[in-house]
Length: 351
Ligand SMILES: *[C@@H]1O[C@H](CO)[C@@H](O)[C@H](O)[C@H]1NC(C)=O
Ligand SMILES: *[C@@H]1O[C@H](CO)[C@@H](O)[C@H](O)[C@H]1NC(C)=O
Ligand SMILES: *[C@@H]1O[C@H](CO)[C@@H](O)[C@H](O)[C@H]1NC(C)=O
Ligand SMILES: *[C@@H]1O[C@H](CO)[C@@H](O)[C@H](O)[C@H]1NC(C)=O
Picture 1 (cartoon, rainbow, N blue to C red):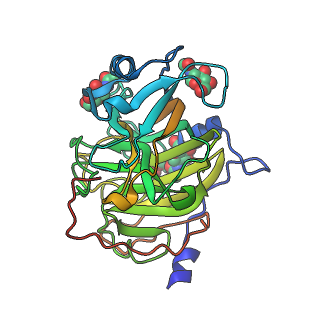
Picture 2 (spheres, rainbow, N blue to C red):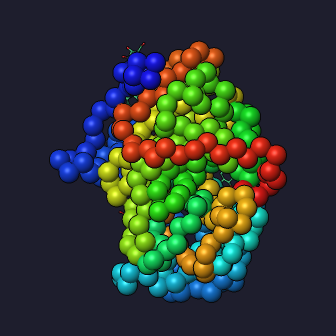
């Protein structure tokens, strides 16, 4: 069964040079992404209070609101000594994990399609919104960063409920989805998604998907790895499926190399999730208990955050969402045999 599912994988056309690297422009062209937004950075360092004002003034935060971590945000000189603007620094205090004890979270929505007219993008149905989005950012962890069990990292979200689809509040397919990144032990990378898990076979068909991995769905764990003491570039592409068809996509490029592309996904079950809403800047250690805590006060840093939106839902083939679904995995991620963690009954507001 396993091999027949893999054999049915839909291979995406290659967009890479001989070294396996793509440019962001190649990816944007491949997916028909048209509208670019660069998040601005201040030229000089800013303390927490000034950084907070800067984000609210410049990053189109939902509700002009930073959910938590006001004291853990600042803009600092580039930790690698690179020239250019100050970079966003996020502190994880020693002992912090979930529960708003360290790191930060906010939802930035600077990019909306200007057209309310439905468009056709490669014949995919479209509500005239950005249903496809590439998120790009550079990330740096302090030299010698202590990863412990893992933590959340920025990704994308969407849907009318701007609070759901995190902290154990599962997706109902109608009100929200989220696709953040996570680091795990030793800096192993993955996408950590709150999406419907009702597709037949979705949770059982292969080792790339771990449903209810501390509530969310762990996608392609260890298909790439974060390192400390150097800048790394992340590109996350998410395309919402056409409603009723499991043809959505989640893909990651690490330093320009495709870590994985998962197609045939259902990210929404209703048109009420009409677009990729924006940047879900959510980062903290955890995890639901103190075993996830940051072993020391340490930081991550961000620069060149950027989104490129495209009109139209995903336009690949896909089964009706009620049918048995094959999640296509063209890239064989090196997935460690991660155990399914049962967390039923634990407080759900923590992460
Ligand atoms: C956005 O940033 C990219 C690189 O980070 C740069 O090439 C591009 O010119 C920028 N676009 C605008 C409009 O500033
Ligand atoms: C984009 O749309 C969202 C949701 O309607 C809204 O909160 C946000 O302010 C919009 N962003 C801009 C830049 O208009
Ligand atoms: C899907 O959309 C892309 C980008 O717009 C386009 O290049 C491609 O031809 C489309 N494919 C199909 C099968 O419609
Ligand atoms: C779009 O649909 C038309 C009519 O069915 C078809 O001729 C054309 O090949 C389709 N284009 C793509 C990119 O699938």
